[in-house]
Image 1 (cartoon, helix red, strand yellow):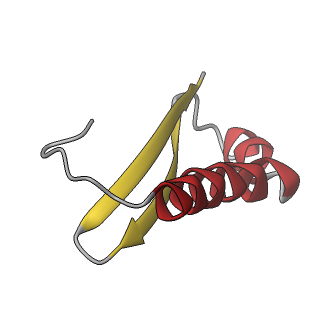
Image 2 (cartoon, rainbow, N blue to C red):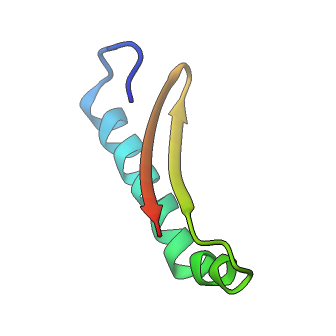
Length: 64
């Protein structure tokens, strides 16, 4: 969800996109989802967030 469109230099935009994807990879690599499922949690929302100044990029994944 983007609230406001701002023009960022392309290299900064690419950096934000890579960083949010890396955050999601860390969630998967560290196996946090299965740990939560072992504790009986069935619906888990994962978020990868990358910010630069007032601009944020967010990636969401529902793990059920």
